[in-house]
Amino acid sequence: MNFLEFKDKMFDLACFSIHQVYAWKPNFDRNNLTRWVKKGYLIRLRQGYFAFSAYKGKNDYAFYFANRIYRPSYISLHTALAFYGMIPEAVVQISSVTSLKTTSFTNDFGQYSYRNLKEALLFGYELKPMADKRTIQFATPEKALLDLLYLYPFYNNTQEIEALRLDEVYMHNDLRKDLLQEYSTLFKSKALDRRVKLLFKVY
Image: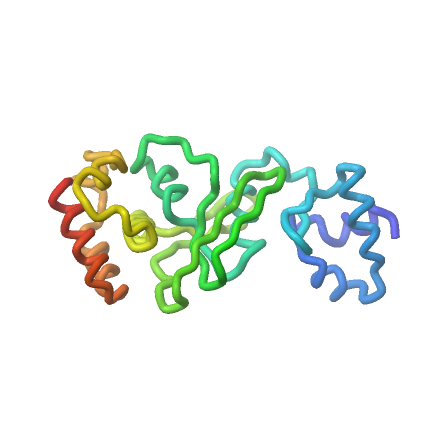
């Protein structure tokens, strides 16, 4: 098979798994993918997942691929907080939460990390529109903050909470405090409840 035929069929997916290729062509020669990666036509995202190089540099695709290469997952934690302007630091790593095991991947689109949450806690995310009529699963600001406080237990004192350097204007004017508290009760975690009270005390 030549690359142009392959691209014509798969390009609109942006990224794909080897299983999607076999669903289309059961006798597909996997060595083609290795060859096309070496030629720069494709980028290996992780074992068994690939993207077309033409998507490199296109807005939002690094986020989109985060959702696609390890599912179920949604973008959260420091990445979401930086996206909403809640923390001042630019975040290099794209952080997500998942009901699968904790893991990480590095590829030409970026560094991807995934932290485990039990399945019942995979809520509080939205589908954000992006280029090409696609969507990205992104935590709401409130859920991103709770995921962070829950998964990083060292945020349990005033000094650590202050070190987050959360934007005070956002915290006072934009954060939906009722929604944050509603979400917090669903975690059923006394430790998280204490951290939320501390958060409100600091901000």
